[in-house]
Length: 112
Length: 116
Image (cartoon, rainbow over all chains, first blue to last red; front, side, top):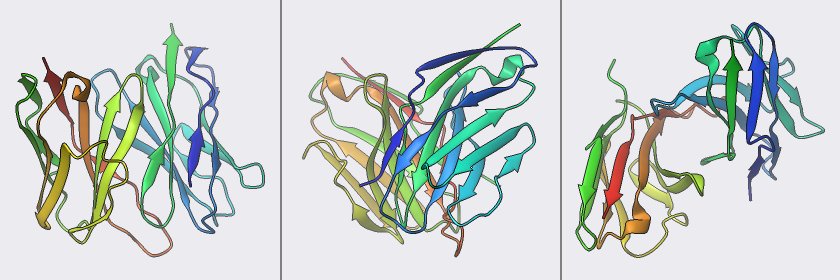
């Protein structure tokens, strides 16, 4: 069975600084995808970034990058130059052949 | 393009009543997922469909919950009878499976259910 673990219930970061949100996973699927979603206080789920298990390079999308360490089964999200609008819940997720499972989430607060 | 459309956005009902949540996935997507989000349990996968066929309903909490997908453009999640512990935000999401890329989920805005 797939398992996603986010060990940081809450994180604080100063505006304009970088922050890393941790995610570890466990799966027996040989091929899988790793995803990060943002959920602001308004409640919608916003897709941020994707990493395939066979991708050789770490994924990047603007200020978001995914630090993928396959041997360690970790897929940490790095947000550079934090903005006040980055304050939200962040969910790590993994998709095997079919379904997608989510971690418990990390609440990020950006301080001015 | 229209995203995933869920209705109703908010539902307040009394214990024992039947609740039906509706979802219209993005046209062309072949996967549809129902999730439930609560503070205590986070985002739980309830059931998902592939090409309108239920693939895994092991996350459906009880027989009071049922889901259908009669065609590619419509799905329902029904709770009968509803109980206060069913109060949550229910999300519908759809995706397109691409070879070599497992495909991100596109979420609806959610249906917030309150059972009194």
